[in-house]
Image (cartoon, rainbow, N blue to C red; front, side, top):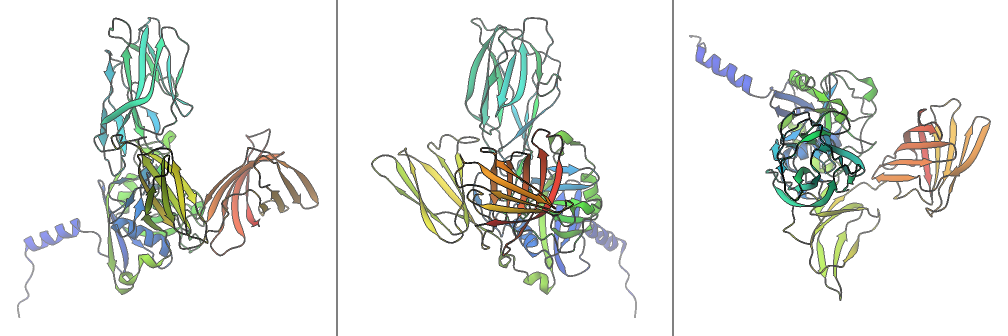
Length: 557
């Protein structure tokens, strides 16, 4: 019997298909193929040792799990990761992705000029790489010319932080901010945020808004006989002449929900590790990072849920791109995650049910409208253990950033479902509500007021026991005691310097007492009565000295 050998064409096609196809799995499991402009890398997801993280990742990647954008819109049957960014790169260490740009933008200088400027000018918006919610916006370049003519200083501010500093040789110049739509075209839809006029040789003045919106800056000569004008200085936070600016979101939101982490599953952070990113303990969500180096400091702090089995060189290439270290390590050029494809191989992988892992559920909330004598009542049905985000607009002609008001109504009771009625003074309202419902009861109280905390600083020698008593009223001082070995001290907790930010299974907690400023991150696992914490302690009169703390805590009642 003759042996039939493959032809050269067959061999060539086989090699081509092998090159174009994702890495063939060497064993059963759930695999994720990450397609980027630099190539594809593949990770095997450990659904046995990190079931919640894998369930969330798979559900978001395939669109099987609902998610929320930063404005409270519910997205169903929509893959979350496709078109998002690797928005943070720690060179030679890790790349981070899985977030949506949030409304809290940070503006970063970009150096352009010198050139010539005519009045009026409109810096056009150019948009690139826009997943749902907008990613990167650039202001177009205008012109710059140094002049010795009398200058008018203008300082534009947002939320108390200086954004631009402008000097021009004309006697009367008007500047205003123009908000833009959140759509992919970046179209200007309104210019009602701020408007003011400065005269020649005026002292530096502030143009302020607390609205978290993207905008462009327009300058117009407002003299009786307008004429072209020049700009002698334009900078942000530095003395560098800047005319065009980069608007980038350094705050990237999760998919709208959190779930408990699993940092004790025995998996380590080594090259190729896929791990959950989070801001506080027990706040895993959609964001993740991929390691290109070993980092033992992350072991026991982040949930490892997979490992790269092919294409680690692609991850290393992304981890080597230039970044803006002062802008939360944002790559200078967008590193786009084009799509994530999930593959299940084997019976166990096929049987893994992402909806049976205790993840939060994201839904729209039914609304009822009633018209009392004055105004309009909106009634929402609040599920137990839910967080509610309510959005409204009185005029649908107003769209884009700042057009829709958003109110996070917070976390509701563990025990009861109940209707909530919001009374508004208007007779015309467009509104929407969304909920995140948690199947696992929350572990921390809604507030620290009226409660007693006992912290044990286990990393001090000797161990220190700190008791904090907070009265129910915010206008009353609290009290503290600390016992370390045979030494004991006590004092007051100051009014107005305490802050409690609660998540379902963790909290950020800060306060000042008569000796120290405290900043704690609290973790309370479901079913536990004792939590763990990490924190920072600084002497009240010496903020440059910082002590790191860790240990356990209890809270009552």
